Image 1 (cartoon, helix red, strand yellow):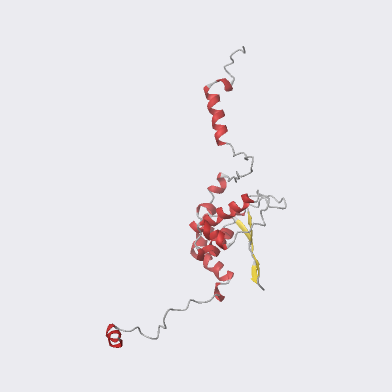
Image 2 (image 1 turned 90 degrees about the vertical axis):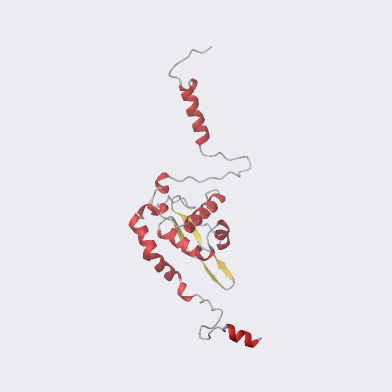
Length: 195
């Protein structure tokens, strides 16, 4: 039988506790079918001004892009495609998807290679998460580190409108009112006379 060594942490209750903590707080291991996917985030990222000032829609859009990244085994960063319906099904308000993407790009959490539509062929946006390396082996750019609290405040006050104008809101169709505002609505007495 082996002698008891008081310095041997594996035989003490403190050593057992640390081993159990490490076991249950370690990154998840892949299952046999490869269905368990995960992504790490640094505390520096989670406490940054860029991340803590995200709007609800931008936060959901960010996590939807992260989901797409992990769905490709973290090997396609820079070529990630998330469609408008995918953003909406994840909880981003439909009319604010473009605004959420603009906010994420402004705060340096993602880079966007803008797509275009035309001739019946869609060329979707391609996303790059800046806190991890890309598909070519380039290290993370960590552009979110340059986003200060002042810059984040500026986004919510003025730069959001500038980004929307640059994106091309000017050429969008205007909503047609349900009635012509120059024609006054019928009064109750006119309605009774007509019936």
